[in-house]
Image (cartoon, rainbow, N blue to C red; front, side, top):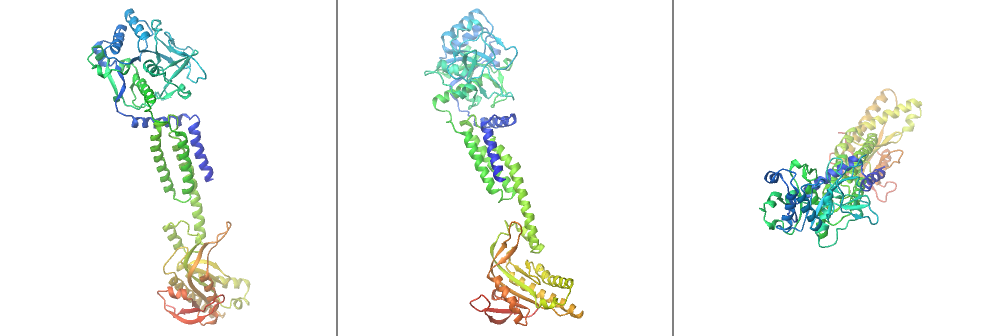
Amino acid sequence: MRSLIALVAITLTIWSEWMPAPTASYFANEWLRDHFIRLHASSQPESRLALVDIDENSLTTIGPWPWPRERIAELLEKLLGSYNVRGVALDMVFPEPGDAAGDTRLAMLAQHGPVVLAQAFDYSAQPLPVRVGQIAGGSPVEGNVTAPKATGFIGNHAGLAQAGHIGNIGFVPDEDGMIRRLPVLTLFEGRLYPTLSKALRDCCATNDHYGVNSDQQRFKRIPFEREWSAYTVVPAAAILNQSAPPAVLQGRLVVVGSSALGLTDRVSTPLLASTPGMLVHAAALSSILDEEAGLAPSPWPGRWIATIFTVLVALMAAYTFPRLAAVANVALLVLASLLWLGLAYVINPHDANFSTTAPLAANLFLLAVAVPFDWQLAQRKSRQLLGTLRQYVADAVVDELLRRDLKDPLTPQRLNVTTLIADMEGYTGQVESLTMEEAAQLTRDFLACLTKPVLDKHGTLDKFTGDGLVAFWGAPLPIDDHADLALDAAQEIVEAVRRFSQERQREGKKPLRVRIGIQSGIAMAGDFGTSSRSIYTAVGDSVNVASRLEQLAREFPHDIIVGQGTAERAKRHALKYLGEKLLRGKEHPTRLYTLESVE
């Protein structure tokens, strides 16, 4: 199941990276990219191009819009002559003729000078496509073309149809109204038309036309690498009255547009909610120039990086989720998400197509599915663990284990333990004359005398052996005074059996005697059961010695026989040395002790 969850998380990232994203996922990705763009945007001055702005002040100084065509022509002539710019692009369309002299001057400049006029294509599917003015320029289609197809246009009037350079200023905003991409090329009636920025670059560059690959033929993401303040913006009035220094514009490419609110040439971009339209074309042109100069960020495989990142997170989750608490796993996913945000921020300028949110969606899936899944498994395991532990140890020991939050207290491990083995002497003789019900009752009552002291002294009840039991201290909860606790329990067992025996004797029944063997040492303690049944026990030499000592007690008048290991570890009890005895299976004699008295 964990492997399946990890596979789904990885598949989710792969699907988000290479398949068309749903609307919510698409805009989550774009929202994050917009924030990255604003953080990345540089204020370093752009020295290769400039903007001439028909701003509010220019309209106030020169006159209201629309300006006479002679004034537009004069603006272009001064830019090309007095200011010696490399080329000019107009971010405006003239679908209707204006004053004849001005149109003639403008047509001559557009036909013979480094001037790019604009036309706007429409990409919407309408019953009656918009077709105003006359389309100009364009080039025949060659080879496989994936450029977006236009359905309509707003072109210039027929007098400007002979312009040497025409650029498209039409765009397709995203559903949220944001301009994030421009069609570098547009297909209309069998011809390709460049966007305004490409047309200006092709018009005025010294080398060949700017190449466009098949991906860019569709819609190219505008990087918006520079803030509005990074561009040189000169008011149109300062050009017309020549108050702007010539050095400000000399040798630059110029885009003429308007930031005036009254001209409604404002769009929403990742940089600003209300951006002058000419800034979009300036940003696109700046990107083209960066690519040609080798200044653009080198391409990175963002999709593959995102996929590999998700694979690593999924592998981490598969390893850590079963081992850590739910809170720790949530913290790891949060840290992984923060790490991805930092990585995506770095990748963003290098890959315009990868999904910045795909690994975040995978992390969210892991948070919503994998964390609860492992939490439920941990809860079920805890319930099983508690059920098993409560069969063997006192509630106080279980509570202490829970408080210490041990990883897996039932896992077999080598521990220093003290083992106590007790049974009834002469059990067969006791029950041979009893009915089955009386024998069962005697056994239950006798085992109760043995069990209560063990649990009261926080011992672990290993098993019942018919008429006796095996118990140990020091596992699953390691304790320092396990030897003294076992001796305490042995004393109480002897006293409990003595009282029980006295009651039976008053009823005319046979007396009872308990035999106890105790030994301390290293043993392997843990759950040695199968998948169908848990058995928590301890095995080792000290356990075997305790069993031999219990059997040896019949040879002594003492109820409790203590081995050397326990004698060495006991701190609170006085022990009496009984001598040495060679136990079965041992090569050397074992020193034997007993408690001097019952305290």
